[in-house]
Each structure stands twice: as structure tokens, then as C-alpha cells.
Amino acid sequence: MSPTKPLQKKNKKSQIRRMSDWLHLWLGIASGLVVFHLGITGCIFAFQKEITEFIHRKEFFVEVPADKKTVPLSTLKATAEKALGGKKKVTFISSYAQADRAWEFNTYKPGDPKAFWYFDSIEYYDLVLINPYTGKVTLVSDNKYEFFSIVKMLHWSFLINHPIGQQIIGWSTIIFVFLLISGMVMWWPKNLKKSNFDKSFKIKWKAKFKRINYDMHNVLGFYVMIICLMLALTGLVWAFQWFQKTVYVVASGSTKPPKEIQAKSDSTKTIKAIPFDVAFENAQKTFKDADRIGMSPAEGGTATIYATGYKGEETYWNFDVLLLDQYTGKLLARKNQSDKNAGEALIGMNYDIHVGAILGLPGKIMAFFASLIAASLPITGFIIWWGKKKKKKNPAIAEN
Image (cartoon, rainbow, N blue to C red; front, top):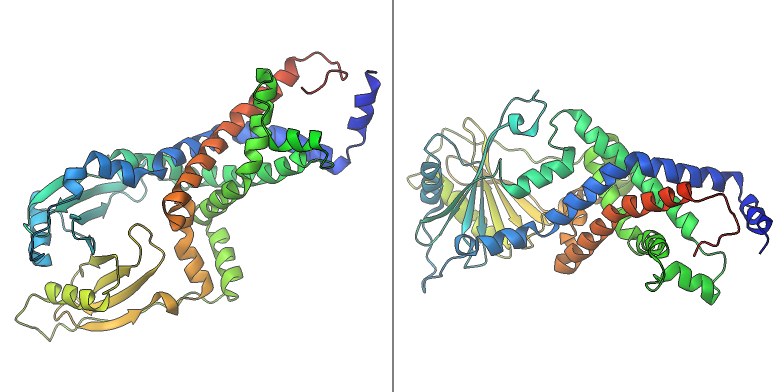
């Protein structure tokens, strides 16, 4: 084969294509470490719920008595606060329709808002699990230092509380989106002859390492491209306010922000029963079909109790909200999932789409493998580049 023939083929590339290839190479090298980091931390976090509940199964799941009678929520809340030393206030409670689940009591208090590191930006963040039938504490966890909390914040901003952390993640993600699209252009077969089809859609496992690595970069990258795009775009919703606003405007067709429900508690009215328990009972009656109910206690004054009814054992996007009087437990206002505009609903789905939970376990499996392959792309891409760099200038040598 003449050494000039392949050279002529290369010259047929357009200026735009050559520029795209050049950018794909150098932007890939520049963002490779961040993309690898995001892929690995995404993989680890994908099954955090399943892993945590497997390790602490005895703490997360309880025996169900025949009468299924639960201890009043206000009593369970007091028990959780006592378990934390009596100085921390519960800020959010999750009760479950699933009878054998322990109920979750969370505390959270921000630290220094100007702190550079994540650990200094939180004063405390705890989880207490309680058997709702006996009132017994089954687990006390300092979630500030919990493994998956750290993995999540590594993924979010490298544990950096300063905006620079999100900027690094965000701009690297934008580069990754470009790499996916430009990679698709480079991968696209000129025609669908069997030889091109096999080269584009199959990994030649019997070939030498160099060819296998090349196929893993191109073929696996193609198969997960759509999923990786979804992961990247949903990540950008958090990284940049302008991107989130753009998604909202495009989906809703309006620049008007979502309508917020407002209500005030009336301190002049009181009842003999414990208002928080009455509020929870009203939430249970209202959210009969909810898989779990979240309760946020009021913080005094005219503030209200928030009750959130989630439809889905793990997802967060499909929920209705109640505002209840903290002094009487009376329902004051309600906002349903159906009241949200398309932009508000899509932004609400963002987390569940990003972690794959919106499609259940199959979605999480897809997100896991897509993240794993995404983490491998900078490595396989670097190996391809390094091999070409070391290779002697001989255009007659075939790719395989």
C-alpha cells in the first residue's frame, strides 16, 4: 500500500472536521481528570440506598406488630432529639407507608456560609432512625461525615463550598457534552457496509490491546452517549443558575417564576391536643396514596408546618405539599403536583433523572454503567493519543 494514499484520505477532511477533532483531543485531555472523577463518584453513589440499607438492614427495617399502632409523632421527635443530646432540633421527618420501615428524623444546621470547605459549611447534619411502633432508636448517624454524603459532595463540588468548586464541575461538564457530540461525529460510519458496521458497533476482542482500547473508547462511548448526555445536562442544572433558568423557560414557555403557596399560623388559636400530631394525622388522611410523608416542623412565630406527600418509594419529583397551622394542625393551603407548570415539574425531576431513580432499579443500573464508561473514556482516549504520539510517522500503517 502506498504511504500517500491514506494521507490523501486525511486531506479530504473539512476544516470544521479537523478543528472538531483537534478540540476533541485537547479539551478531552484538559477535562479528563474531572470527567473521571465525576464518573467514579457517580458510580459509587448510584446504589447508595441499596448499599446503606443492606449494611444497616436491622436498623432500617423493624418488626410490625399486629395492631400496627404507632407512637405519636411528637413523642418520636422528642426521642430523636434526646438521642442527639437534647441540643439539636429535628428539621425533617420521613414516615413510610411501608409498614416495616423505621422512620427517619433528620437534623441540619448550616455552618459558616463563607467557609471554603464543605465540612466547615455545616454545623451539624444527623440522622436518627426510630421504630415507630416501640419508639426505640435503632440508629444514630452523623451524616456530615457519612461515606455517601462525602461521595455526594465530592461529586457536587470536590468538597469545596466556594462557588469555584461548582464552576470547575460545571465547565468540565460542558466540555464533556461537546466531547460526546464531537465523538459522535468522529465515530459516525461513512457507510453501513458490514466492515464499517462491525468497526463502529462491535469491539474486536481478539485484536491486540491497542485495537481493543480504541474500540472501547469509540463503541462503548456510542452506546452510552444518550444516557451520558442526560447525566451531564441534569448536572448542569445545578452547576449554573442561567442553565436552570433556561431549562425552566424552555419547558414552561414563560419567564414567570412558579407560584409559591403562602400561609401563616394563627397564634391566637389553640387546641388541647398536640398540634404537630394533629397536623400529621391530617397529612395521613390527605395523603392516603403516598409512599412516604415528610414533615417539617414550624420554626415559631407565624411559620407553618410543611407536610409533603411523595408518590414513589425513593423518587422526589412527584409530590404534593400541605401547609398546616402550627398551633392547631389545621390545613391552611395546598399545592399539588398537577398544579405545577412544565418547567417546574421538569426541574423537580432533575435529581431523579440524574441518578436514574426515575426509572427505578433499571434506570439506576443504566446510570451506573454509563458513569463507569464515562470514567473510562478519558483513560482510553489518553491511551489512543499517547500511542499516536509515540508512533513513527508512517501513514501506511492501518488503524488495526
